[in-house]
Image 1 (cartoon, rainbow, N blue to C red):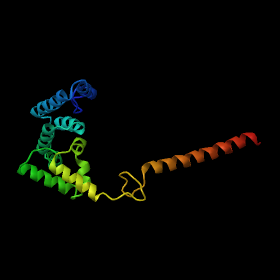
Image 2 (image 1 turned 120 degrees about the vertical axis):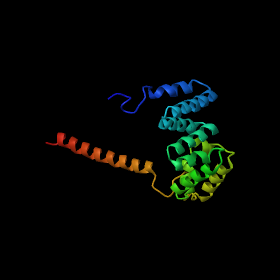
Image 3 (image 1 turned 45 degrees about the vertical axis):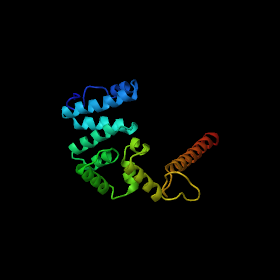
Image 4 (image 1 turned 135 degrees about the vertical axis):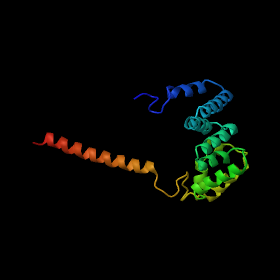
Length: 187
């Protein structure tokens, strides 16, 4: 099946990443926004969305966040547009409508809303709305039990389950090996 038929472009996925890492942060921002605008003009909203989402995941860029919100709105994904615009400086009726859809998607769960924001938005301080959400999440987050730390909200830690499973597997293998060894030694 050809790449065009499969819905992929001919550019290898690592090509863009390699080029961005070789450039300065301002060049990568300009590239991401410029390339996303080119994708939009060509009717490839999905590609612009993916490019911008990858860019804002690690880089605080208000212009890219605003454009990401526009792309999501153009794709009729209002809650995702709301998440992007919530972290940007953009304001207006369309932003308010999208933010309301974003809040509705998460049932006003501030922790879920917080984690749906790109990491760069969560890490950047100075946006009054994001800072207020950060304070609300910190206030609503349950206190650690018995001095335990971390984001474990009362659940069982996956590492403990994996360690127990590996321990049981080790014991089973040891028993099987011991029984096999006895079978060889005792006729």
